[in-house]
Picture 1 (cartoon, helix red, strand yellow):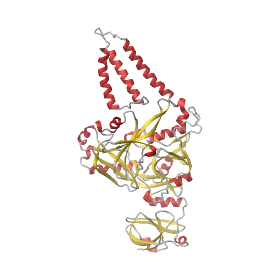
Picture 2: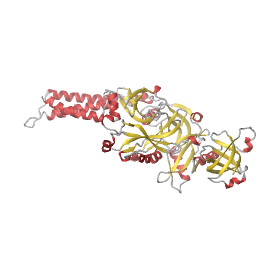
Picture 3: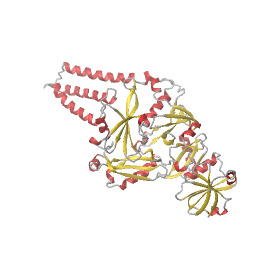
Length: 547
């Protein structure tokens, strides 16, 4: 009878823990094994409590000793399985969990399109996206019920780059007020123009990590996939703007419990809750984020740190990535050591690779594709990211602007750090470029166009002049409009003007020799021009100009 009585509170506690922790029913899951161990200990404790007689003496039966033995056996089994699955016995398997493709800087120039087309250069980092995106919450009824997630991942949507973040419930009590209407939608921040919009859906989002009870995403997935070991969930939209959650499924590949790898992905309709499991090979084309960045970087660290075994005290051939989590900034979820950029394979994470004993320089950098899980290394000796940040901050030391963590772009075949410079309020005030191979080549300007023009001049990229273009017959176009951007540079004693027209993303280059009255040009001046194409995309050479 004592054993049955002890079973009642144990079952109640077990149901509560299972409901809250949602462990996978899987013997290869640490969560499930820990759950079993906790239940055995709980049952044993209640058996001991109910073994105390009226005199206060403990009376143990044979069954008590059996439960104790089982508990000890399970604990030892977990520790033993964990021990024999560790890097101590399988360092080579851990080192080979991911194969990093080796490339040189020439491959980088072909894999990442040249960013001289300023219309495609993403300038919005996560922090900036938060600043502009969070302000859109006021556009919905009862905005105090909700909050916007801080993730703001970079995605490709309808051919443009956006940072996206879902709307969450603002807390437990606010959930009860808002759950009947659901979550209104998500926030899109244009990564090029910095424009933010809150997309309100006709059918609200019901399933979310911030929801409770049956609408909680993990609980909903656990009911659909009882034995799956879940990784991180990403929020994304398809090309029609429909919202989905993408959740990785992990399985051990080394020993009983080690070498967890993401083998498949569950895509859940955020509105209806319908789920489908995919392998990486058959993911829908609109998916940009499937693999967790922490997961990919953990595999990369295994690959770099275990290259000569676990006991490589001299760190021979050991490298590290710049990727890290700043625990002292955990409150705002600020990450350092990575950024995102656009390659021919889609959105990729960038991080530098440094020797184990030297963090001031890089031997190259990696681009990790969160859709395919492919990691590519590009050899490029140069300055580590923090050195580039310090270099551009030195250009504006009097203004005390701070540089964002850089991303890497291709400028005329040269790997280049791109950063924004922000003031104390977190607003973008300048744009900066710094050469990876030589961080003394650093420029900053109030606009991306000006910074790019200055950088091209510093790296010695020649600017076409009217005399050079007369040798080849090119088609001439005409246009007119109001100048929205204007900058001038001097090349070989001749003044040239870069300008853009309102509603036109093209960058026009005009020599002072065409019309001396150009010295009077200002933003808002009305001009009529004739121009021709150049070898640089989106930059056009003016052959005639009238003010």
